Image (cartoon, one colour):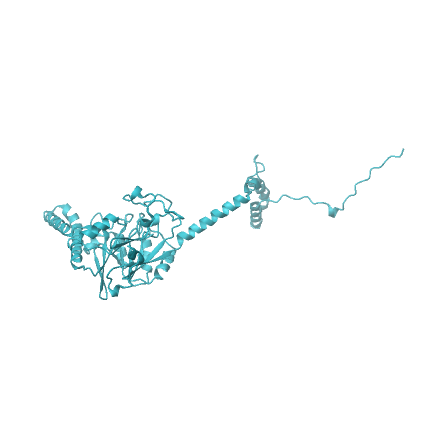
Length: 430
C-alpha cells in the first residue's frame, strides 16, 4: 500500500510575505526623540538616554499602564453623531453670544414735543448708558466707531458709566476718542463711585475741585460736564434746559432756606475754631450753590422752552404725575413740568428670552418686585401725560441682577433721539 504524501504548502516569495505592522508611537514620543537627536550633536550622553525616555513615556519599568496609552485610549475619544451635533450647536451658540455682546446696535427714535421751536426741529441727542466699565475693543475702538458715525447735537450719559469696580479709564477712553465737538453731559448711577468726596480735598482750587470726586473731575478735564444743576442750552431762538431728574420734585424755596441757615451756623463754628464746621462748610456751600442755580432756572424757564431731565433710575408713573402737578399753577418753588426723561439702569433686563423678553429688572417699586415686568417699562419709549420717558437698553450688565455679566439676546445699544413738533401716531391715538 503506497503511502499518500501530503502536498507541501506553496510558500510565497519573500517579497510577498505580509509584513508585520509595527505599532505607531504616539506623537509626543516622536517629538521628544527628535529633540534629543538634535541635542546629541552637542552632548555625548543624549543618545544613551533615548531608550530610557521611551521606556519612561511608555510606562515600562514602572509597573503600571503606560502614561501615553491612557491619553490615546480610542474609547475616550470616540464621539457619536448626536454628540457631534450637540457640540456643534453649543459652539455656534457661544460664538453667536460672543458676537452679540461685542456688536453695538444703534436705535433711532423720534420724540414729539408740543410747541417745539423751529430752531430745535430735528435736534438730535445721543444717549449712552450703563457702560459699567466695559471695553469694546482696544481703547473702546468698536464703540467709538459706532458713536462717531452718528450725527448728533448733544451727548448725554445717564449713569453707571464707571460701575462698581471704580475704574474710570473705560469712560475716559470714550471721551478722549470723540470726534464731535457737541457738548457732553453726564450723571452718576447707583453703581458709580460717589460723585462727592467724603472729606474735603485740602488743596487750593474752586469749590467744585475741592468737593467732587477724582473720577468726576477727570471726566470734566476731558470736556464732559457733570450735570448737578439745570443747564441752559441756546439753539438759535430756541432754548433747551437739562436738569438732573431728582431736582424735579424739590421745593426750591424750602431747600434754600434750610441750606442758608446751615451755612450760617457752620460759619459761626469755623469762627469759633470748631473742626466740624471746617470740614462740612464747603459741602454746604456747594449744595447751596446748586439750589441757587435751580431757583434761577425755575424763574427763567418758559412754556416755550424744551425741558429734558437726565435720570439713572427710570421714574415711576406716580412720580411723573406728581412733578406735572407741582408747577401746574406756576409755582416757582418747583421747576416747570418736564417734556422728556432719559433714563437707564435696567440694561434691558440683561438676559432676555425670545418672544418673552426680560424676566427680571432691579426695581423694588415695580409689581412683583421686578419679576416678570411689563416689557414696555424695561426699555424703550413710553408717554405719561405730556411727558415722554425713554429707558435705554444700555451697554453693559447691571450689578443689581445676580447673573453672569454678559447680555443674552440683548445687544449693547446706543440711542439717537430726534426732537420734532410733529405728533406721533401714538399721540394721535390717545
